[in-house]
Length: 333
Image 1: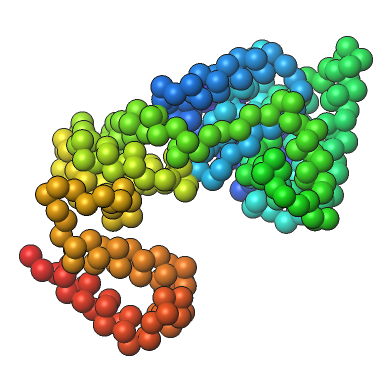
Image 2: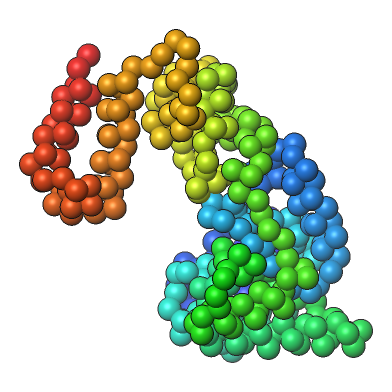
């Protein structure tokens, strides 16, 4: 059993559980998604307060990297079920049959966690047979609630898919659309960082402090230039991407300071819509940008230079020459 009351692994639920525990993750104990000063942060906390005493299923609509599992944990801990089990199921990690067995088998999560919270990280990716079973579960929750005998189990779903911005509903996602619409009255959309830039300064300071402790770097500070670059960048992977960038920067520097030069070029130059009065080093800017694009292409191509060159519209020899030039620049004192 985990040290924390109410937080169990699947093995504890039953002795006959499936052998592979991979789909169940440890719940994050940090609250990065609650850091900030924007009205959105207050709305999120208000939503949790309003939903905590309820038992009906909840839907969290979130872009990648926004850590909706933290919100699910906060919902669990804010209500009377805080001492009961919390199960986190990684729906992306298993086949449809294995996921169905894990959730709805004779000793599955849904049966085992009758009075706790079950969190699923991706409603839209659930196989049809699993979505159908959850549709029946949600209907039972609604019927039991209306009859004055609500179920003690709470279901929390997350999804990156928001049908509110879809123009067409295909046959493949019609069931998902129906589930999302049923859950919409108790849903909350987690705003991406690009829509609440005023929170980035506070979030970056929080993450930098935690990462400095983790990396044993002592206290660190973000310079004004670095903070400007961070707030001027549109974070596609949100909190996860911000944390990765800061961890890399802190790992490169001695204690006390994170300057703009330690941030990736895509962030440093994201706000260069106007040339600063003191000018820029154009060859360096171009080199940095080109290096970033080539690194992205190589990563996407699995390290294969031929495929990366094709993605970039270059000859393999040209790509090779650029890589050698970048390598020689890195070796210079």
